[in-house]
Length: 492
Image (tube, rainbow, N blue to C red; front, top):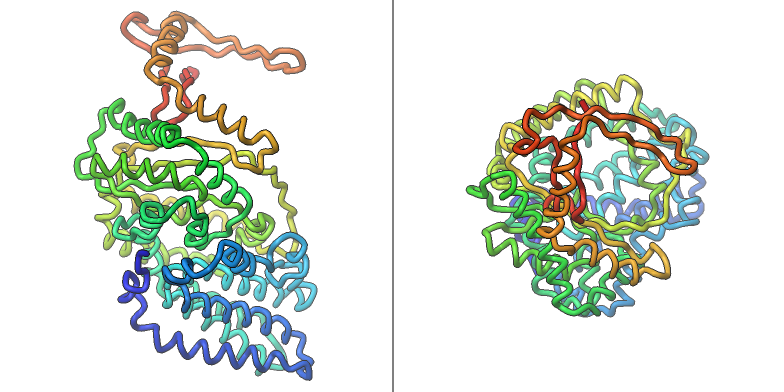
């Protein structure tokens, strides 16, 4: 098993002593807040959130190869469930992670801040599995500061707690940006690929090494794929990787200097990834795994929605400028990772039940001014990235498969999807070219709806001087956009 402790040794080394101190302090907080004679209305909050932190700390100390080997599948399921149980289904209705609960208990000024804090702490789960002690320690210290302030003050002011939150957001800004590129693009971080390459994928305990919520979709899709013949798995992988490489050939892009490819991955498809990684390594591309784009069952989509704009607590012009400056320095340090990237291979799942979020007044929201700041910020970040990455020289491929959540006929739908996704691309390229040859001679396209569909539009097509030698249509086969079967143009 890849040793994250060693990988992050230098990153963590100056935080180890502080980390140990935070553990001692949080144990004291939990002990004091367990005293039922303490009538403070914040007692239950600090006891439950502090206990959650201690659970994560214990988990971090135990995680290694032996941890997963020594436990049964059911034990690992139980551990995974314990991490997320507070935000699952009906329990979220009484969870401090729910802004409504915190506002009801602590008021409109303090409630949103404490809900933010708990959501922030829950985000440490990823750090635990990666042994990022520095990051866990930083969040622990934020919890301790808020506790110390509330415990020692009779009149609580939200601006003080907001100051603590803002300070944490500013802390290690350059390193935060730098580590984001390392954990998403560094091919020396082989944790994900090593799980896939070296694990017995028939033993579903491997799923719990990823540090994400593992639900029905992940377990059942892995079980189903384990029952498929290797040829079918290879066909799925070949379609994906051939499409990716075909994107370079068709656009006459070079792979020279490219060292890696980023996977946007749906957990459960590891047999397919294993074959795909092998294909891409043959042409010299090492796999990287985008933690920001990992796909797995969300334990609670409403929780994600409730905290979508939590950055509104500290997003100002000043913060934006500081973060842009820090990002510029970070991306320069990690420019080799960006330059070596060849693009993205994305395998997505579909068929999850539709989610309609509930908008709550208690949620943190961005103001109109903050939305403007956010837009400028994102544009500046993209500009800095583009100094080292010319995405015109990238390829990408996107392919999708159904998840068990789609319903009882999942297996039939999956088999049909495999057939569609693995259609003979060269055959349909010829078929589609005949369609294009006819369309290129047209003057306009008339789109008319059928039945209750009242669509009725006429689209002017670009006039060609020589339809026999020119075209205005793209013959989209199964390269970057799978499955095959698309002919498109732009209206004049």
